[in-house]
Image 1: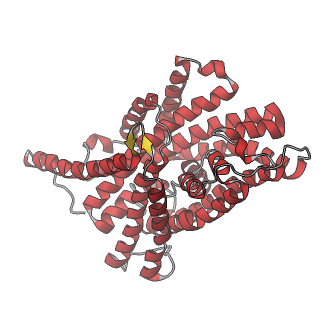
Image 2 (image 1 turned 60 degrees about the horizontal axis):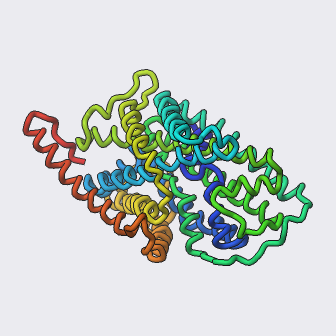
Image 3 (image 1 turned 90 degrees about the vertical axis):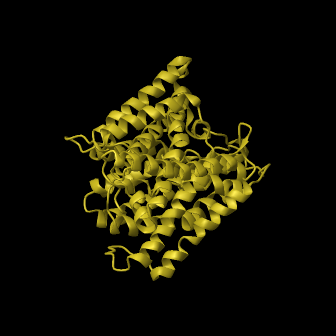
Length: 438
């Protein structure tokens, strides 16, 4: 994979379009939303992009962040890094088929009625599975095409909002229930995923240069694609209290009529496919490297002779996500921030650990400021995660507190590590291969 496809794939892993920003506008209003969308990348996305750039160019190995954490802090932490990522993927990957069907129903409600919607969601998972088995080149090139198709309706919306709209749509009203920290929490969710493309490092062309360019190119694309549409709608004076989940379709109808509304709904379908396919590419590289380290059966290391794709891992993960899809998980922001945020913090700590343990490691890109600089860039994300978790500590899923669920997931990872060690030791006594030392 080269730079432009990597930017496109990273965009889908992080954003998948401006969808998801509606609730920030509703919670905070236009000015605060624009401020949040500017500040959050500085204290969350930029430090993560700097960290990923150094580690991905220094250790461009398949498995990405798992390898970084294992190498910097040992096998136990490496296992926890992957456990947090894969358990978080259960909630995230079940979300996209549901979004796909929801946006499809916006312009073709009869098509998704009843069990047909469920079948269409399964069909989307199957298509993304075949797409991934075709290899990272196919996913990267397809992501570029899907990016263009996804963003075109928003280019039209921005043009209408800034340059061609002269109608009176109503003055912006004060926010009825302002929630600034809640808006920041949603923005964090919309700015997560910068490290995901690290797992395919073994399949990237000249990773020592490509990763840095792709990271900063993707940061710029995400920020611009968030700010311009929100700024354009703010310019029209549409009441922010009218925004709801999926509200971009309604905004498109107000500003550009039914044609633009349908185009934005179609873009939502494209965004769901692109995000699911790109994230599948990232997550399915983890079982292979885990199998090489003895934590999973060796069958997960099998790859396609033609494309190099880990087809066994892709198929198994697809079946697992397909089984979770009908459960209809709602987006659980607190749980997602806890699991994903903690895995990202482990990567920041691995950055510091490797600076100390391997000072002579060749680093084509270095975070400025030496070891102190590596420590400092991890502090803003840490502070942000602590703030939002304190603020949302009482949120629940069903009848259970999300933090309790998250704590249970983390504890399960610890227990599973020692259980996998015990199982492997027993198989080793039966003639299996020994675990690698690192």
